[in-house]
Length: 148
Image (tube, rainbow, N blue to C red; front, side, top):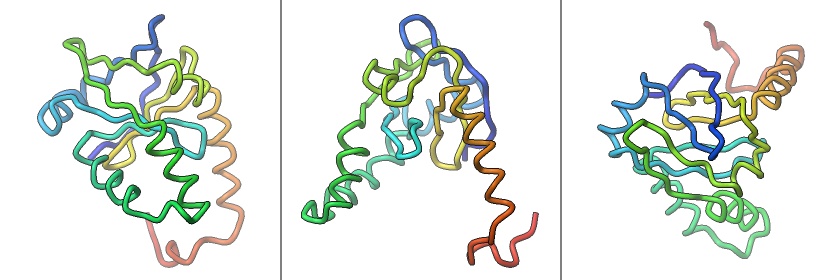
């Protein structure tokens, strides 16, 4: 389970140092094999490979004749890249994925249970402000009765 947010920096080569608190878990669960792919919100999704494979397989089995499914397949499978953590716990984020998510130097790695989101720092702040507007509207039915 990955939770919490970490403000990090990409190095000059586009490498991301995975925070130490996640490294052992990733090494134990997937030997440091991760999959990075594009998300519709303009960030990257970072999956341990065993979490990604069932999603990929399910997407592949869906009909590509439906334009919405095909668009999702193009985004998630088309941008998917396998990476391996190096001995220092870093992964290389390719220029293509850095360009897609507009990642420069300052980034946010945000735990989302079975995966992470990787955001450009400024885009993360804008997303957080946009998410606050959700509180002023009607709640989705799934949140009825939900309490913190």
